[in-house]
Image 1 (cartoon, rainbow, N blue to C red):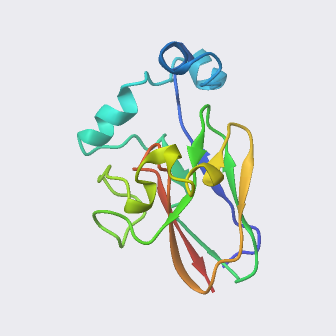
Image 2: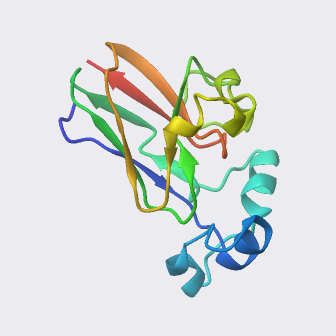
Length: 155
């Protein structure tokens, strides 16, 4: 159990393919691109659909345990936006944060048209503080990349 735990959102978006499809400056991941390790726009979705989500496109760690009342920062160290949306449970195997199921939870329905989703957005280089959680296990999912999942256990 830690007082200083954080969740890190990571991805390896390829600025060329992402920005061509989604607009200039959408993907700001210059490090992976410079190293030749970036993934094209279709890569993460096709890998997740095949049941093998790329471990470089994830929330880390899969589970965080903290003392109730301590905020948990979600830090986006990736190149594109993510969300950290609390969901009642994960679709598929709800006992694990990491799963091959790419199905969004019902709380992610309608994406950014759902007023509860945009307020959980974490832009590149920024962070979101998760606060006010009751004791117990809480599930968080990226509504853009539904294989990105983590659990926060409040003690």
